[in-house]
Length: 102
Image (cartoon, rainbow, N blue to C red; front, side, top):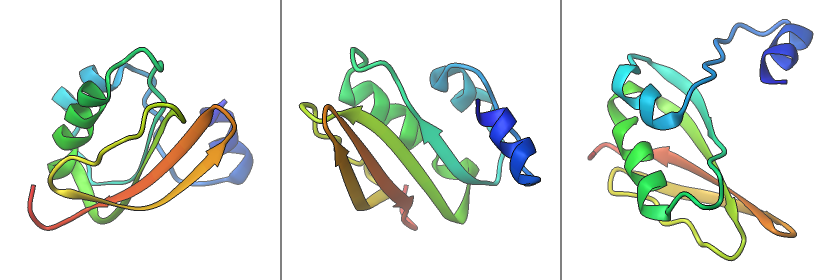
């Protein structure tokens, strides 16, 4: 779906279809936008570890979007700051950006 949306928009983007944990080990960036939609069963700590591992691969003005269950609040790891969240029933989408300190 993401790849088709990129084509439909005529946007310049690379879609990586892989597990976030695998991607962190190979991410070189700089990435402007990262979308993380892990299964709800994945712990918040594990998701935060993936986000933390992306810090060096993000552009200075990058946005990280994390989807989680509304019942499981997401806590941004050090080096990141949340700036918006949107709840949609059972799902909450968290928007954050990196800070200078990892």
